Amino acid sequence: MIKSSLVFLMSALLLATAATAGCTSNVTPSPNATITSTPALQLEGTTWTLASLATETGVNNTLPNTTITANFNDGNVTGSSGCNRYFGSYQVNKTEIQIGQVGSTLMFCTDPDGVMIQESSYVLLLKNVTSYTISDNALTLSDSLGNPQLAFEAALNTTTVTAVT
Image (cartoon, rainbow, N blue to C red; front, side):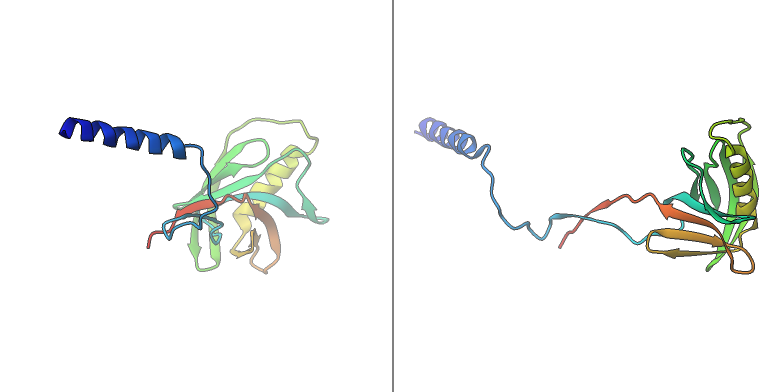
């Protein structure tokens, strides 16, 4: 009797599983649902891509087909300066920032025209900034007179957060 009851129960479970496989529903997620959101941006933990930099003739966009990035983490700043990879140290006190010595790889690039001049300008400006602000998805690094020198945009990534109640 127990054996036939067990066979009947197993058959019922198998049939129920097969019957519901492939079924969909518009059920409201439970309180333990996974939510995708964009967290508030911070200096650290964000990849920043340079949009414009100060030059002798004003503020200019970066050259086409070049990407300059900055990653600030644990007192180290690293990234691409358009041709080379660079690295350095930094210190932050509220909205003040001081970039230490900056080193880089030593490649020479010729394309696009002017990329090495842009790279030199970027590294020089980076070493001379004294403050920063973050607004929306933008990071602005300014000089001691408050003049914007480097304007970055965040490479936006979404973070998945699981809510548990």
